[in-house]
Image 1: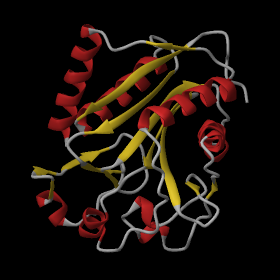
Image 2: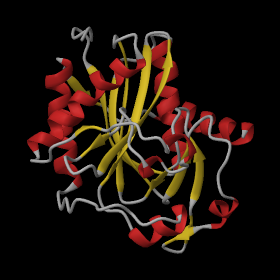
Image 3: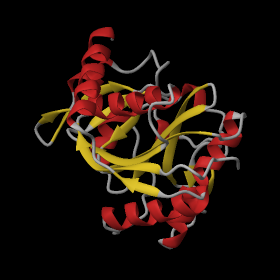
Image 4: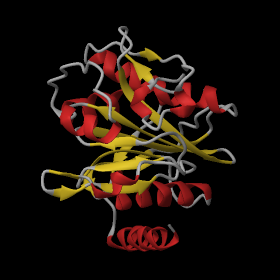
Amino acid sequence: MSIPSSAPWRLIPCLEAPGNIQMALDLWLFNQHCLGLHPPTLRFYSWAPAAISLGYHQSKFPEFWQQLSWNNQPLDLIRRPSGGRAVLHQGDLTYAVIASGFAASRAEAYREVCEFLIAGWRSLSISLQYGQTQRGYIHNPNCFGTATAADLVTPSGNKLIGSAQLRRGATILQHGSMRLNPDRALFQQVFGQPLATVIDLNIPTHTIINALTASACQCFGIQLIPQSLSREEWHEVNALALSSCHSH
């Protein structure tokens, strides 16, 4: 792997926010890194309120998704800047890696990024491997309904992490949902199918983040510098979130 290890990466502290803000932040970090104005970044975040994120090119989805609610709050319907299928963001933790220097092949780059996820979860005694693309994937609107080679599953085939990617030149944004404590009834309501067996993780979120942060340093050979967003950065991210709302 040819990740440049000289410059430290930025670690943005775990953030809970609405999906449009989270996607705008990922896209802003990606754009800034493409322009050479921002270092490589790792971050973890959660979605509040709960949301369904659609892949950038996903044009078809059930109309009733726009009328759903959870915990007396409307479910957000958000479009990601990356590809892939719909993901329900409730009881999950999302990671994002924004960096350059990965393999030119999309599949190889996925694997290079996913190494830190596999190593981090292994340190928590959870074994993960790459999924196998199944025939029904293209027709399944639910990202967690099938596993592809870009996803990480347990040895019994249960999908724990679904990832998607945006690439421009040598720069990659890869983000993914790690399913920790999903509401089975909500999943059934959204996708019309029961949730496959979920591992009873019972691991605190901060423990997971610490393990994955440590494995990222080791796998990528980097130093991570924790740094929250400045007021000016928030201003730019909010402006981007507003403009993407208007463009949909």
